Image (cartoon, rainbow, N blue to C red; front, side, top):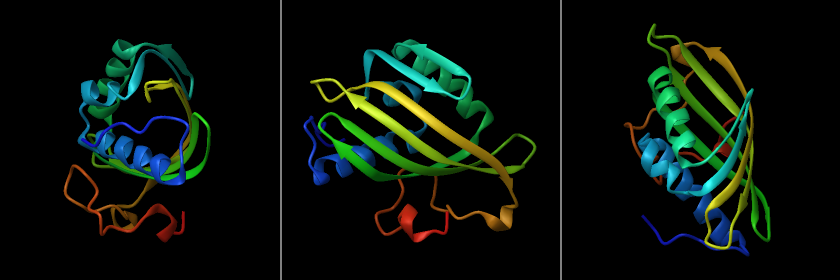
Length: 154
């Protein structure tokens, strides 16, 4: 893993931080993902609001039991000081083989150590046919030559 980018961000450091978070989510290891967030990080996602790395790990463990073969593409949308806005899309299937695409926006606020202390997500999920999938790389990190989110009509 690359050294953590610290605020205040430049375009380059913000983009590197976005990619680093994407990589950790694509590994689908809740404990590794949680290390990118402060110990008392606050999350707001859909109907849930919780705080702390333990709660983050528990949430992600539940998520990736339901969202199988999860693949995520993040894109830096905007940044300033210690905040980054991201747009994203992910694809996954359930245990019945039904595919879904989630997309939306996230707002990240960082502490002085470069850890996310506030994470707010707005997500829309909808079913897709397997033929409509766009993210086909092997599970894990998205290859560098894979199209970026802006390359898709999402």
